Image (cartoon, rainbow, N blue to C red; front, side):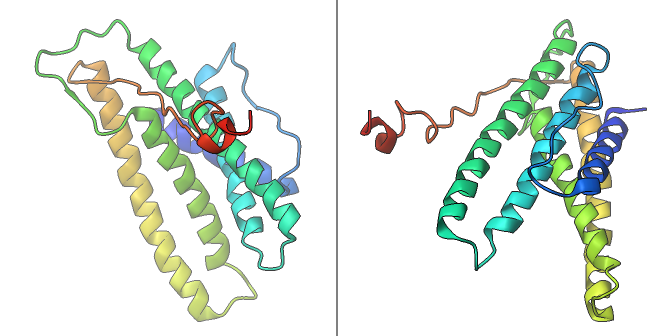
Length: 203
């Protein structure tokens, strides 16, 4: 099984598991242990963060939401975004470690994004596929709505194939030394009380 097959299988497992209870405050349990399935463990955690945040984003768009509740939820979304970025960096660290002994070709080139940022897009795409399928098969929706969503779903499925192939190709090129990777920390400034002038001014 190649990497994208592993990732897409884990992402489906996460999304299906979340929707059994289907609430943002449900407890999280990782189906994979670090010790025996580190890659799957990281992928599972990554997609869980994305799945919860997907539903946070739905809730905060409620025009009737209480302003105090909205502010609390905005803080949760901010924290989730930081967790998401951290998990991308963990996954890239995994790829760096597993390829640390690869001798790169003198003509090796760097990609526009690291492998884990491709994984980030693949995880979000899994959520789009799930929810668009829900809309394409929703019994209380009009046929026009279902048909339109099915057309969008077909595009999303094609996009997932293309993105999966591209990630697998990138990882192959890294393993053969034709590509090399670097990880640039995101260096987010708005969460840092030394770098965000609003937070710094309150110290």
